[in-house]
Length: 142
Image (cartoon, rainbow, N blue to C red; front, side, top):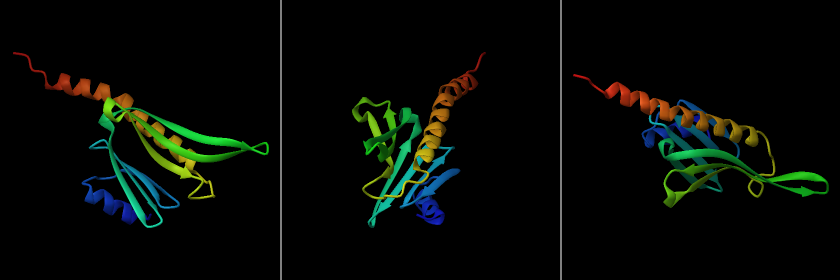
């Protein structure tokens, strides 16, 4: 996916992406810091997937790296970003960064997944203090 196409998807979703990464084959992720929404797109075999995730509903973000031993070496099968949500009905959400069945060439996917885990978790840490500051700012005394 090209940057212009990703920005067009973001605009269609009403998002202004301030930070993004795009990697092969057809993956993109970006953050709208104002609305605290994450946009993820995946295009494989002419099938497109668009996900908008509200970070206000996320409790935690982690990276899942599924690998196996083959002849004394390690083969990575999947790299995913896992979101644990506050709503118990939808407890987890998974965004694929790499799938060996779709692409044999592993490049920067693990580094990117870790980068986005850190970006999300920093925003999650800042959230409570921002909400507290907003509440304090809305208090009035007579």
